[in-house]
Length: 236
Figure 1 (cartoon, rainbow, N blue to C red):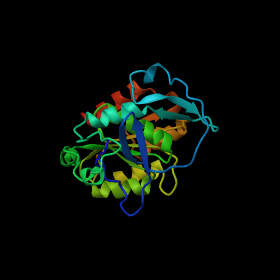
Figure 2: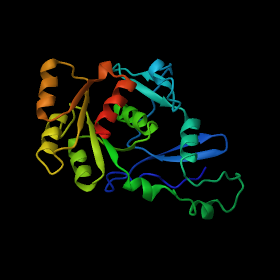
Figure 3: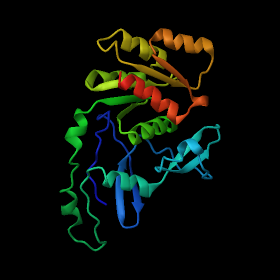
């Protein structure tokens, strides 16, 4: 499967690694945030709340206790190929591969760039990927940032963001500071959902006072509750 990239990276000043997914005779090149290395793991089911998420083959528990979702390559490829992307399966001995690859383009790219988007901000690759996949599976266009500074840059350049989902504890600019930054700017009415591992009532109060409209603790994270909260603000 030869496919033109669907999403332009948020930060065009840095180089992004590419991962090649394979399913049978099909291939898909994916731009990713980072490749931290190889991790030995045991793939386990992720629970009833993820049984409808075909993108996941399961999950693995890391050394720090966090859960790393494991993607099912064939479902990722099927999702992309069924979403308006032009593609062609080529034989291994096709001499025109290089020329043909230049002809493929995403027919929906211009349309998607004009759609409203949700900005997910989290320095954890696992959490960022999980939230993005849940939102994209629900039909939303998603942009991602690794901290408040990068999020602020995206908000300055993007006019179609309708909701921010942010972590609290992040380097450079944390979630509290990001909330205050948004509330003091021209997009001060932008809804903000804080999704964080910090569950203390005092910290929740601090987040809401800084400008967050809703507060979800990662330890109590449920996909249905997360999506219903998102819909409440996106459809407001």
